[in-house]
Length: 116
Image (cartoon, rainbow, N blue to C red; front, side, top):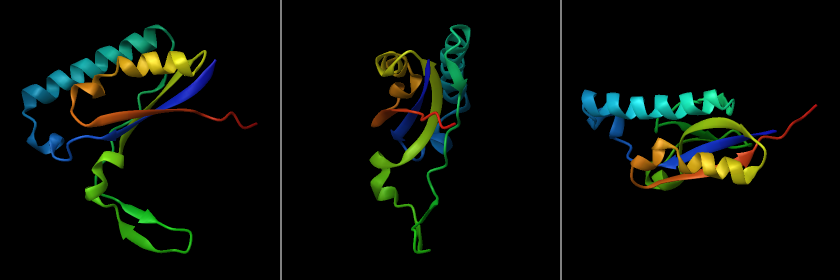
């Protein structure tokens, strides 16, 4: 079994502030169900967390800049880690993710290297 990180990109930067409490509760219920199903199948390593859109970017030479919201489609907005036999199984898990209920989302699936 291998661990795969599901990296969520894009979305609506104002979703958390513009969403009604009822819609937020419904979204959290869908996420909870998805994660409970993964836990039941022993496939959830970490539910991860959503990330705030604003941030800083640091280069190797010490330059610090603001993360550009103009690049929202490429901005990492959250992650989860799942455990599966192979990447194809991780892709199938990602297809079930409630993140796709929101527009302009992509999910990048990457194997986590096992370093010993």
